[in-house]
Image (spheres, helix red, strand yellow):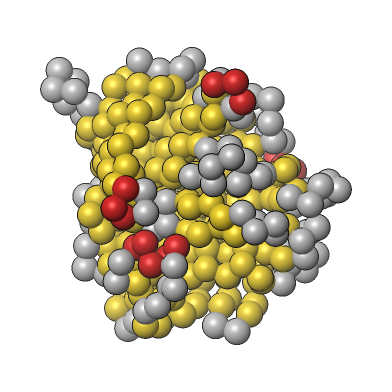
Length: 308
């Protein structure tokens, strides 16, 4: 189990790509609205990365992406830049986090514009959201990272519209060297309609091996690690390799993961040495075979590094 002090910022290593990140995502039970926030600190590059994305069947895609934000001072996770204010705060370790945002988001007509010119119009965007744990945190074996299934409540502001939100979500915290441009991976989390929560990752390693941490949480909040996670993804080559669906075997539970049409929220990742990765994230639905009959919602990401 991670310690309560692990919720705080950590002393950085010496590596150029040493970083520390906090992720928060949320999805409505009907998959008509969802979003995520990520704060990544890169002290040896002298910058922070900040992402806040919102997708909805009536909203489309709203993006807040800043890759040259000043590092927050002291031990805080508060950012203040032109057109951006965000405060991420641990209210109770391993139990309750809050995320506040006031920013101008960019509305994109086509999600793959995020990989290219990112042209759109600006829309005021605000989050006043709370992540409350529904199970204990899951500590990744052998690395400095943990995940937690949550319930998310609060308000979202889009222009002059105020939207109340209550739905499942996920948060994670990690620190160490992360080379986005070396390994491909799939990360997923969600909530099924019988109360089951799940998370898993499939990280490609040299030699054809894979690192596959993950867990299941039952409707009573009991967490059990999974022993295997296999994936098979179909992509749309005509739309910058956006994933169309992924068939998963998550610890013996078969699921099909499909991004909803309005759910793509991708990010372009530029390395200091010029390499470029595509990082499609998407609000997804999950379905099990007819004999099982469960369905659910959540978020999935596919890191697509450049070819060797």
